[in-house]
Amino acid sequence: MECTVRWTGLSGMSFVAETGSGHAVVMDGAPEGGGRNLAPRPMEMVLLGTGGCSAYDVVVILRKSGQDIRGCEVQLKSERAETDPKVFTRVHFHFVVRGRGLKPNLVERAIKLSHDKYCSASAMIGKTAEMTLDWEIVED
Image (cartoon, rainbow, N blue to C red; front, side, top):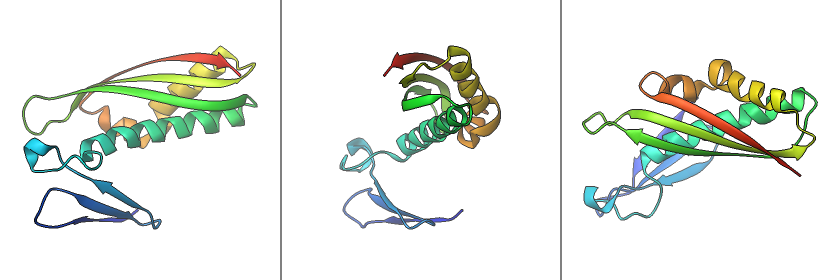
């Protein structure tokens, strides 16, 4: 996996990241750090990537389990260290899984498999952060 991150210039703290798969993402800093609040912060990107990684796993696992999954959302709330490096110290994942006739035990299993075995991003963040999770099923 590869990517390139380029600072956009002297007038702020915006960056354009280009992924090896050919996609671009803009990031920006907070105004107090010289940014203009035009895009997500880099650490927000880390957090949202972790949510995406885990949600991806949950959808794949539930599909393979024969579940009629129609939607998957994960809401993440985090805390970071007060001093540099300001690593994540706590991350809570709240999954909202939508579908028809979803079996609670299979939803719980999919979420736990993602966190315990498959999600690389969660595994990395788990080195510095206490991670908690809960979930709910919404009948579609």
